[in-house]
Length: 335
Image (cartoon, rainbow, N blue to C red; front, side, top):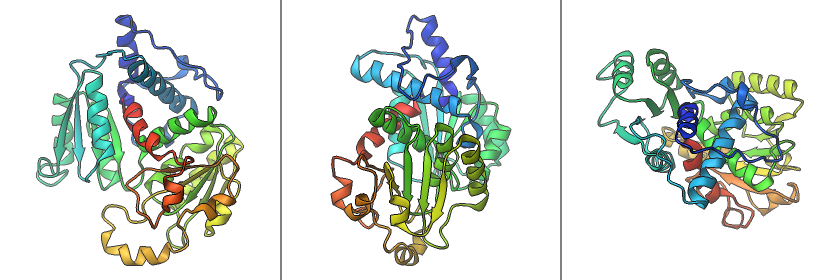
């Protein structure tokens, strides 16, 4: 469910007799009495502890079990509305948000750049105040993280980052739920990132160590993650006793990795850089050669959409690929 409504949803469930069953995964049970999520923004995972992120995953797993496997109807967000601001096109983010919110009885309101221009026809401050008076929360998919930060500052309702230039936290929640389902425990896993130092990688760097996961990153020269984010990730690794390594060698990053991860080489807004980027990322395609140096239990993740130059068909469509369960889990983690 939308994370900022999780506490509201949980309380509503208890009032209506829908008692959530929090299953005990091997990576431990979240300390629910220490988790306070109600009313908080989800702009980046750096603002959340491991226990808080774990709690989001537990509720997502429980909703998936109750709705998908048991066929229960849980109209826990009946009467609630969600504003959806999309400056960038989307398949999975829009579809998962609309279907997930509707499954819980809520009403999603989709706004494109034809309907709303952040900071253009109306100031961000005014937009935030209007949205606060008409909706219960907002999910925004924007170009600039600074726009999200200003929206959150001026709004009186929770703001959720549906993607920005710096972070994509809701995608990482789906990734972690997928890995939790497959491996049962996240602790001790080694994540091998091979690709661009982009918003997906930044979100992993802000959270992996909090689960006890190691991170090995390979990017071409000039396409490394943001230095300030790298500095924070190094501190998280130190605090949690995990390893973080950065290299320009894809096979070095893949060595011993449990999870091979890549993403688009050309993000939205970077289309003019296509020729330059395709040249820079030569040798970064994930193939079975890459997998040969990974751990025996290796799996593969890609947030989609995928291009063949990023990962070949043999890996992408192999039994080791978790990309389609990963895509489905966008619905359960956004709820």
